[in-house]
Every structure is written in C-alpha cells, then in structure tokens.
Image (cartoon, rainbow over all chains, first blue to last red; front, side, top):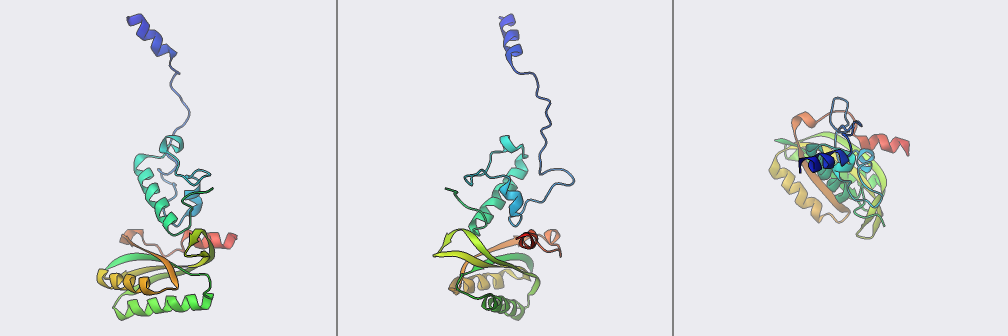
Length: 84
Length: 112
C-alpha cells in the first residue's frame, strides 16, 4: 500500500520552477484603475470576459480590484460586456 | 467634504463646445454649493464599446470634485434629468489616491 502511494507521488509532475509572480503586486506594478484601459484589456479574453487569476497569476486581492475596475469600465462603455 | 470622481458621457449629436458648456454648468453648480473642482479633463469624442440609447460615440468628461455628499447627490439628480448626458458615474476616492497628473486616458488620446 505504501509503495503504491509512493508511485502515485512520482507520477505527478515535479514542482514547477517557472516564475509565478503577480504582475500587479510589487514595487513598480501598475495601479489598477478603471481609467487605465490598456492595462485592463490585457486581463480580458478576446470575447471580453475577465481572465481567471489561475491563468494570469494575479493575487486574490488584486483580482478583486481588477474585477471592480473592469466592471466600472464596462459601465462607461470603455470596455465591452461581450465581443461577438 | 470628500473627494469624488465624476465621469459622464454626452450624446453624439452635441458639439464639443456645447459639451464644454455642460462642464461649465457643473463647475458653477459645485462652486455655488461651496465645493471645489480639483481636476477637469476632456477625454475626447470616443467611440463607445456598445450602443447606449442609439449612440455609437460620445464625449467623455471627467472631474474630480471636493464637495459634500448632499450636493453630490443633488448634482447626480440633475444629471439624470439632463437628456444630453447618456451615462454618468460617481466614485468616492480617498485623499491619498488623488494626484495632479493627468489620467491615463489623456495619454491614450495622444497616441490616437
């Protein structure tokens, strides 16, 4: 039984060492704001949907800010709700 | 007294000079209520991401206002009655979030 578990563990991919840091945290990170459309556009899909943070590796707190900013920009017709 | 950001969109048939007159009206209203305009910007005649009341384009105007909440509420009600304004948004901001530099929207305009 123990051996089986060990095998399972080795089946997993070894730890991914690629850098995974939040693009919105840190010293020189851009400020999340509904007026900065260029920045917001990089966090929405081609269809106009918000990208999940597991893809963009944005921290939870920043993702919340981002979500608020995108919704404000949408209300002001700066960003689309849907892109057909 | 608190800081507020105001963005509103003026419908496409209106000329830029008329849109700026509307901006002046808001200026005068805030001043008459003892408030203060901290920043004023004209983001230009931009195309909207989607149609609003049959408008495909609109004039964007931006303000940062230092005023009491009651006069902001009153201004909001007046804006709602103004048919030339198709959409507006008030946001309360913290004092430390205020900066004198022009917003990102002004940069983008230069690139166009």
